Length: 304
Image (cartoon, rainbow, N blue to C red; front, side, top):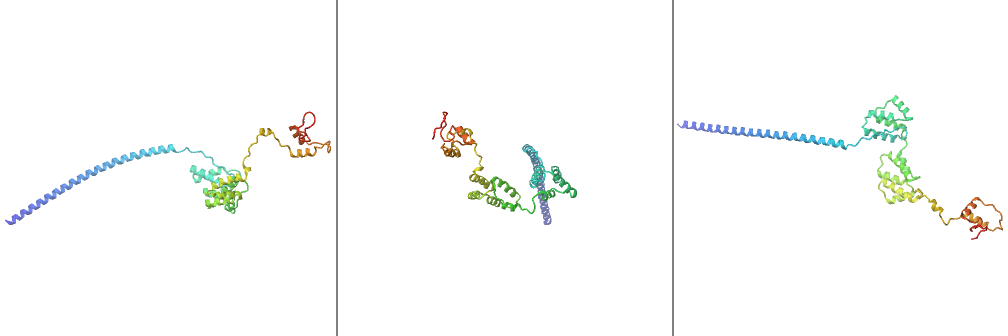
């Protein structure tokens, strides 16, 4: 009897446990289904947001490209510089600026440059390309500098340190900047000191007193003080010929007055020859040829 009661209790416990587990499994499956549905809803929202974002990016890119095309300046037509063997460094600079502007490939640069050669440069290029053609723009410019550039034994930096002003400040500035352009490795302060030290002593003294901090400021001050010490560089004002002609108190030539004072006494020289200058001035002013008095029309002069 007791055994039957114990077995019945175990069966009830097992049934309760199975029911509990079944309920847990149902709850778990329900939560899983909810999670899957929520996940699918989230994915749908993400897809919708991605579509909207792509649409927005496409509209922004199209507007940006159209505005860029509208703001892009028109391309300017540039002329390639010709080279006749003079000022090779300046020509190389202009040619490289041209190639950079048009984004010219390296293997086309030498061909374009050869078309614009003139005079003795043409046979030199033909000989060089016949012996050993240039394989790059850098090799070509190096050969040009060796052939037409300054001598490697002449240092532009040494010439920059020795150059001095001999004429005007503008002429000195032009020669100085030409040397400074090829003197690499100098600081702006060093170039400023070289320029000031090359000025004339009186101009250099005035410029140093102002303590300029830049090269352009020193040049402006030098031109200003040049006008102070060399006023002849200023353009002269035109003389008004009418005002000169209307001068009521003209100055009589000194040599005429002295000669007239010496020859005034007729006893010393009764007959003499008069030079044309002595004749013209008294005639214009209505004066006597032998004194400073007015010469009347009735035949004799009135002395001073």
